[in-house]
Image (cartoon, rainbow, N blue to C red; front, side, top):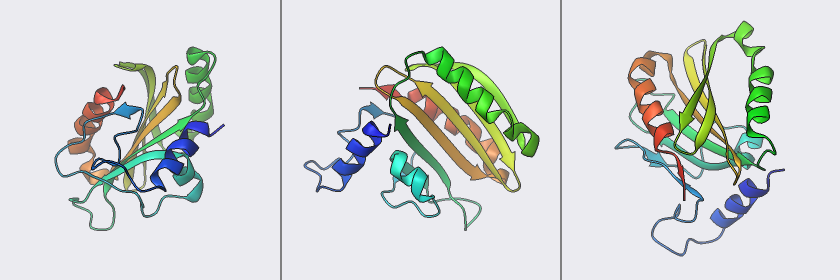
Length: 165
């Protein structure tokens, strides 16, 4: 069910009541200087956009056609967080044959997460699957492959700053 994503998405279709349009999100995270929230992300498929509750990008990139981004999606919470993480890993394992992918369990302030790092052609992705009592969150990062050595520590810092309010 996409209940939380829909609630937050619907909120953004109404005029914001405060100067911070993201004040009502159920989470907070710290973005590096220069990163900007983006309500209309280019190149994001409609199904991902409908699940997205937050999107931001870094307008300063070494690749003029591709910015580094962060996308947060939310779905209904799982009954068993460990089973959810096991299922996500099993579903994503076939990707490792199509692209260079690595899997790791890490602990973030909001709980245990599955970290999936992938490289395909000229881009890299890092996703954190984070089940919480509020929702199952996916924090997804993309970046041009050439920027990965610089971006990976930034992405880790953003993920580690993710907290439920």
